[in-house]
Image (cartoon, helix red, strand yellow):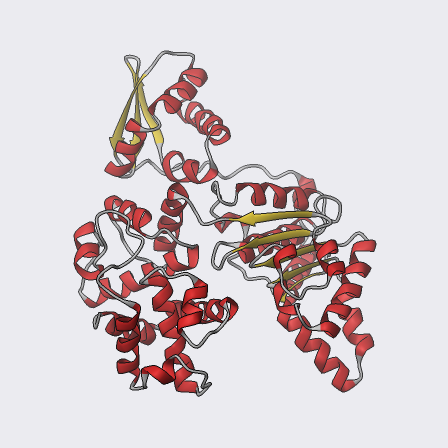
Length: 451
């Protein structure tokens, strides 16, 4: 019996049964290493996977393996690194082989499209929270302009809307290198429109957007309340849609809930398929933590991964920010592998999930931020737009959201009666700094140490 083929078939069967995030986390890293005396021994790369597969997924593994081997087997999960098999090398049909010229065209189009090189389907974690949106995206790739047009994706900050949208763009160019695709934030569309009006070059502006085969528009809620920008976007939308070109839009809320968005645009946006993406569930958070830890080169024990997945019950961006914070702390304290003791000691993470930090009040947190940045608490919560105050206010908003889990609206009320979109912008700004600025990561840790 060919163990490699049997296991490959077993995994394919499990892939159909299980949610993608569960499959990627618990099945994909495993390997059948022996089949003797009616016992199948399955290698798992950690004790955590051994325990989870034995307790939670044993019957599914057994059913699929029995089906593929035509035997009635007992299973034994063993903590052992699977042997790396070179199974991915396959003969490629000639009609799938792109010529050098096509490859060059594809590369050029990707650069012109503004697509982020990492936002592909290969790096997208799929789970219960985005499974439907992912399935719809696959349908668009097969029939662009026909299936789900427009495709409207909405959800909170950091849930993966932009990643999914750009992954579609990458796949469309991969399938047809000559497609003219462009990703842009809605704010960019508005800024370029205003610039074109000043230079009296509207024809060039219209051709730039209306000659595209597919547009990927991020944060479309930002055109709300801007009459002329909505007018021009409406005509651009109609021109593309009537030509059978694919339109994909994202927003922080569904079309009908975007204030000051014209009814005709609401109607157009809801004329295709509208899907929402929720916060990741436990299994999806596990997969995200493992992927992000690999990307930033931080070693975590299986127990630490499980601990983080249970405690960081928020969006992907928050998870990545927390991992970067852990990475900096681990490097500072010369820790090679992060375990649960480290998490408890340095991050004060409880052994069970908590929705708030009862020992810290919003007043104490604001006071600590004001003291750190040497500003008055009244100014921090006031209307001033001075540069130093704005940064301090952004940090305060982030900590109120992240450390105390306060609602967006409440944070806005505390910080001078600002609306929730301003607070979301502040949180996004701090997330970006955390992911790109090592010095700022240390700054934030110093502030937290005062709590």
